[in-house]
Image 1 (cartoon, helix red, strand yellow):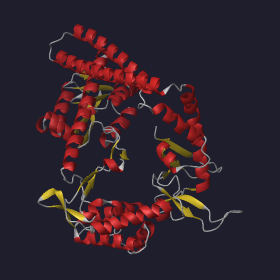
Image 2 (cartoon, one colour):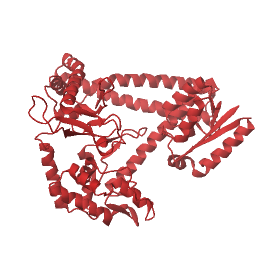
Image 3 (tube, one colour):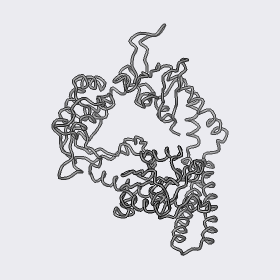
Image 4 (cartoon, rainbow, N blue to C red):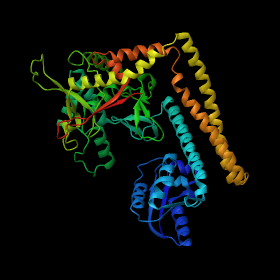
Length: 517
């Protein structure tokens, strides 16, 4: 029977189980011996080093899955189930879904996990839950440590901010990089002289000044490295981020965005009042008064929008081909019967480098605003009717909301207790303190209780709006449903981003709206 061997190790696993016992070499050696002892013919060894068990983009992992689907082998061997994945969703997707369809058997040698044993399905599921809980706790602990370091004024990013270097004697402290700092000072001077962010970006690109990521690449390559221009170029957004970053004024600014979940690489920007700023942590490149003057100019320009008003969709329109931002541009000619030049949203990347986004997506700004407005109205119609139909007296509604919130908190505690009980029960079973029959009965009872508690908590979600929010919500919904023109404040509240694709051969255009709720 043909077999594949899968080995994985990451920093989280070194800390949890010991680098010596979990090294890639030791995993490979153990599994090769196991394969030989059981008569398996090893077709390939797949190794992912320095990849988390929750990472779905592991290269060797995905190559192995593709080979399994093609029938290249009948067995997958791993040291433990957590080496294969710590993601419960992947446990269900592959161990109990795809592998049986593909005729593939999964064996975790140390855990004694074997998908050929139908009776062991619940054990594999509990094992997956324990692995995922561990990863979630680890993520929370790491985030807590990083937040503490930020608040203590320690610089924690992998690379120094453009214009600075990490202090060789203290990696948490920034020192000025003279060459890059000269570019930063010039950017601020150009802006104070009247150049906008887009114009500054064009000027730097014309002069061949390397963008921050390109500069970092060249620095890493060293004096003898490749100094030819790379793919990164200056853009309006990069200049704007530089102009608004207080770190250049000597105040360390961090925590501007965070991951939405430990299972996702997607990040979201946090409100400015949640950013962590520690004053006077390092030498400034820009004088604080000069920095404050730039912020005043930026605020004035943002209010005027260059043409008197900020487009309500500004900063939220994304190219569907390359994922880059789309900015508003002017056609230079007036539309038929119009009062001025027509404005479009165009992909920034397609304008800077058509090779990276050849579709050149664009859409008239007026058409996009009208489409978003129609979608907002349609989206708000049903919630508005429900809010108005259920409009109780404020005191009664608030009382029910508070009672529902207290019940929700109680259920959260009960759910946490049941989950701990399941985990401890599994550990007792592995240690031999609980018989298989007793374990099965308790596992079934705890799982049923957990399912009931979770369902009751989900049913309370809709009743736990903030106190006094019922009437306010109805007012917002009514305003959205009756909106005659896009409103920037309301769009910011409801719309996360608008994804625009170029027209197809028939002229039809796809526009996706990602809501904030």
